[in-house]
Image 1 (spheres, rainbow, N blue to C red):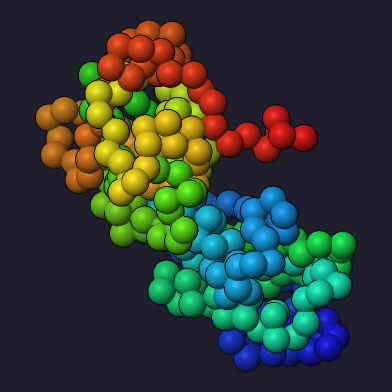
Image 2: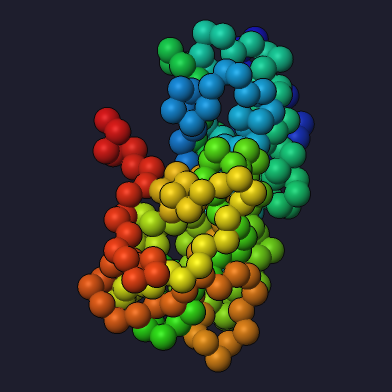
Length: 270
Ligand SMILES: [Mg+2]
């Protein structure tokens, strides 16, 4: 196996690959969205997961960010550092997982990079688009807005497969005033959304996945549901969980009690 043999195989499924850069015409009347997510052996996954699961999950995390902006994914760059234990069969499986999700999302692989390291690392960068000026930002929530999630929460222990909410996100364009995906837990991510919007939030009710506790839903993370706000007069899809109020920017309360913004934080775990 060589870098060229991997690339040759890839080009059969990804015709945009071949030059030093992929050349792409920007879609008319659209803003471009860019996001990247690292997946590192021992941090985001272990070797117990199959290659296909690891590839699919890595892509799903980036697709979820595009969904959170109300966008449509278009192109994907796959960069990876191969580990001593990753053989050709494993790499085929890894790409199989990637292509499976990208095919569903109608996005294509446009390039990437191959290197090596002591453990497997990949970086999935996705470029998407959204109608000009229509991207769902974190900063648009206003006091009086209702707060919603796209589905029940419970954190990574209860949610093994990430389903990026792409259709749901697109439905929120022109409806939601602010939106983000929940990657690090409701408590921390809602705190971030409120801080960006300069508002506070009051939670009344958090829908839970079967078997999950409120604590897991608030703090565990990796739910990858959408968290968004909309004015009360607008009929929004999803599950209402509370409302946006005036207050110290970023402050979150659950049934009157303060919720600490604790969730999954890589920078704290160093
Ligand atoms: Mg995100």
